[in-house]
Structure formats: C-alpha cells, structure tokens
Image (cartoon, rainbow, N blue to C red; front, side, top):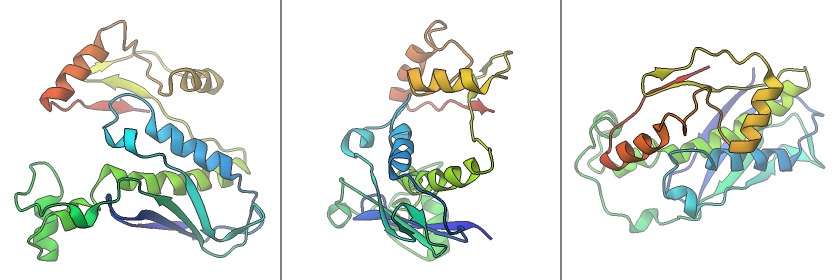
Length: 205
C-alpha cells in the first residue's frame, strides 16, 4: 500500500513528508519536485507568507543516485519564517477554523498548538508528496490535471477536452480557469473581497 504522512508546524524549523510503499528503481528528478513546489507558490490569492518562503525539497532518505530504493522516502521543506517559540499564545479560537475543535479534542489552552498544523503552510509537505507520486503515475502514462470551472458562483459552460491546451495555459499564467477572469472584472472583485475577509467558493474539475 502506498501512503504518506506529514509532520512539522507552520512556523517550526521545517515540514517533513514520509512516503511508504513506494517501489524501488523509479527515477526521481529533484528538479521536477521543486517545479511543483514553485507552482504551489504562484497564482491568485496567495498570502504574504509566499513572499517569505522559497520552498525547495531536500531528499533525506529513500532515494539514492536519483532512484528510489523501495524504503520509506523522507523529504524536508525548510521554513524561512521559523519563529514558533517567539509567537504569542492564541486564546480566542477563530471562527471557521480548526482552533476550537482542536483545543477541545487535545485539551489545550493555547490554540497555536492546533493552528500551527491546521495551516495552509502544511500543504507544502503534501505538494512534495504529490510531486513524487506524479512521477510514479507518469510511468504508467497517467497524468494529473485540474482546472477552475467556476468562481464566486459564476460558472463556465466550456469543457476542457484537450490536455495540451490546458498545460499551455498553466505555463503562461500559472493557473487555469475557463472563465475570463480579467475580462469579467472578477480579479478586481476578488482582491476587494479578500481585503474585507469575504470568502469565495470555486468549482474545480
């Protein structure tokens, strides 16, 4: 069985990904892993944290001479914004976040112990794992691709059937949406609502 685990806090020293069940002998290009990490940092609506971090994957185990060994693969992504011991306690749970559920479940008084894991930053470890799995899937001619079909209740009736066209769009703008975001003024509205803390839903395919 192939599965992965992540460890690390948002403002801790690093994030760790451990992948188990990965077969031996698969060529792992570290440049491809870091390409996926860079893609994660681009696109619309990224927070200020993306200006601080420069995510790169460091292979700690399970890969030698660019080939998987069949043993657990351990990957590390360092946090530039490492300051967890300097941050104040969070005693007021934020609405809509994991804070309240977490402090009740683990009997904690400081919600920071919860939010440091329930953070968008943790997805960096997941992207690292996904990048490795994408390489494995490519051995079988399988590709992973997705796009935005709707934003804020405005949906496109177009269907993307040509994967190559989708790839070209992603390469050009670092995100893909079948809606003409700029033409419809959605980008301006999105930025305005972001400042007000208003959330938008999206429809993904």
